[in-house]
Amino acid sequence: MGVDLDRTRSVWRQVAATMQARIVDGEYPTRSKLPSVVELSAEFEVAASTVQKVYRLLQEQGFARGEVGIGTFVVDELPQPPEGA
Image 1: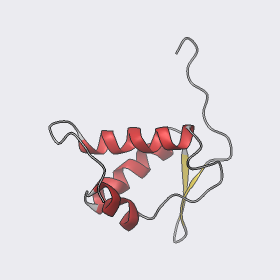
Image 2 (image 1 turned 180 degrees about the vertical axis):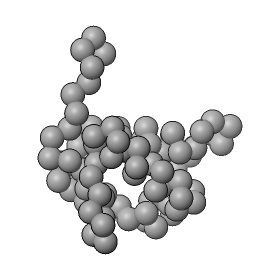
Image 3 (image 1 turned 45 degrees about the vertical axis):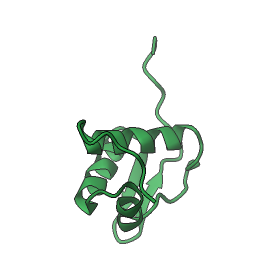
């Protein structure tokens, strides 16, 4: 069961946008564990390296934090959108 992605656009950016929206919408609440790289790569039908890139971006943007050997988690407090956005 894959998620429809526009393969003519940057796939990793689409996956990142989807995951960010899921976090903001509460599908993945604060402090919850995100799916494993293997699970998410299967869901989106993308390479594990793509999901790893997505998780790095989510961490850089302040939406997630990684714990080595444990997984990736939604942060305790989501970043606020820039003023005027």
